[in-house]
Every structure is written in structure tokens, then in C-alpha cells.
Image (cartoon, rainbow, N blue to C red):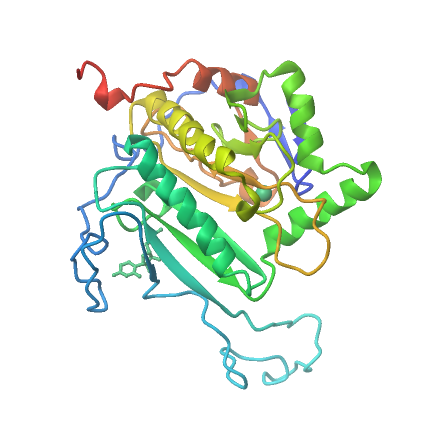
Length: 350
Ligand code: H2U
Ligand code: ZN
């Protein structure tokens, strides 16, 4: 029988129907590598000319630059794009059916390292550490905006346009919709139980550990009970932390090795460079108390059965409710069965 599980961070319900997993697949198969780029793009490499003509420095570690095609730009007073309510026939300025708000902000791109062929699981600990330190620095530096979203789109399958390993940082003058949803659910839980939702959730998960994939002194990566994506992961600190900048040096060091381990498992699962969209969710930069919020990162990989068969959010899922075949517990077990230390490309290399 199918069941439904509730995501307490968003209130969304997910149908779990494991009996469907064995259905035949005659649909789309994607590139066999999971990276799927038609050609290697050089725009982000050291010394390369970007599409707007700027030339990248000969960087040797991480490299951050303002996105040449920023979706968000700092608002200039009096200059708001688009048609405002009241300007269209039949709408009033305060019409609730035609609401709009300014969307100011800035977007940056961060190249992880000078090496175009090294994704995070293949990088050295100290180089992963530089990426983490840069995430912390940027989130702190951009905190004058209301929210800083750090995210990585990895692989062409999730719409990544450039094969050079990189992430993006969008900081906005407004609270993005999903953050506001998670904020209100965590706030509500805190006012009812006097404990942060995700702190309590981890406490309960650690009693049975059947969804825990990676565990260290300071971090846990697990397939959440309510996972929507087949091999979704939720990364949580073992202590209550609201912002990236509040992490201790020990937690930062440990994060670099924990990340390397679960990302190696990801790549080893289907022996491909595992595609995903990931992002940090830290407490918003609102003046109010944020003790209800627990720092976390989400990993949403699109792959379902092999390196080439992708989960589509379409049909019933697009029109009614999301559904998964593989249970969160089975997905966690499959990831746990993968090697966390040796990447499949480095087997048999002395
Ligand atoms: P994605 O691969 O996740 O799309 O990120 C690459 C970003 O890099 C994308 O947002 C930016 C694109 O706008 N970019 C530049 O700013 N300059 C370039 O020359 C190439 C890509
Ligand atoms: Zn979240």
C-alpha cells in the first residue's frame, strides 16, 4: 500500500509507493556520465576570457566574481522593471490579484579551484576547506541583504551550464519563498515545543539511524524521512547552529572530510559524476531572534535507477502531489553500501 509522509519544514506531503519500483522503463535516458556537457566550457578557467570579455585572473584556489548575467541587481530608487499593478487596464494599484514587489540583490559565481576536471569529491581536503571558508566569508560579507543563498548545480542534468566545478551565491533584499516557508514552520514548531525542529528531528533519527548515511562528531548526512528525490540528503550539524559563520574551526574541518565522504558515495552509487542541486539554508538576516532555525544543507539529485534514468517531476507530481518509489530507508542503505573513501575513478590506482 502507498503511504504519505509530511515534510515538516514546508508542510508538503510526499506519496511513497515502493511497489512501483519494478515497472519497466522505456522513457528518456540521459548522458551516461551524469555530467552530460556537450563540450567542455572554458569561461570559468584561470586566464580565460568570460562571455562578457572580462579575463579571469590566474587564480590558484577559489575564485569569486559577480555573475555577468545576474538575475538580481541592487534596486535603484524609482526604477522598477515590469508592468506594475494599476498600469494595466482593469487593475488597481493595490489589487491583490496583481501583486508585485521589488526584487533587489546581487549574484556571484565561485569557481571551486583552478582545475576544470575536479569536482568536490575528487578535490583534496584542504581545497574543499577553501571552498567552505569562502562560503562562510561570502555569507558573512553579504549579510546586509536579507538572505544569502549558496547553491551548487552539478551536472548538465540539473541545468548546470558550465563544466568547470563552481557554485553560485545569490543574496536578496527579500526573503525567498521557500526560506520563508521553512522559517514559519520552524518558528511554529519552536513556539510549540521550545526546541528547534531540526535539532529534535536529528535527535530522533539518531535513535534508529536507519536513514543515516554519514556520521561524524560534528555532522550527519541522512536521507530525510520525507525525501522527495530518490537519493536526497539532508546535512545537519550535531549542535544547534543558526549561521555558517557560527561554525567552530573543528566543525569546519570536519565538514570538509564529511562532505568528501558522502559525495564519494554519491559518485560511487552509479559510477558517474553524480548530478544534484544543493544549497545551504541558514537563518535569514532578519533582526529578530532566530533560535528556531537550524543550519542545514539540502542535496536534491535527479537520478533514479542508473546514471542515465532520471526522476521527472511531471504528470501527477506536477499537477497534484509528489511521489517516490524507492523508500528513504532503502535509498539510505544503498548509499551506505557504497564506498565512502575510494572514488570509483581511483580504484586500482596506487
Ligand atoms: P550554472 O552552470 O549553474 O548555470 O552557473 C554558471 C553561472 O556562471 C551562470 O549563472 C555565469 C552564468 O550566468 N557565467 C558568467 O557570469 N560569465 C560567463 O562568462 C559564463 C557563465
Ligand atoms: Zn531547508
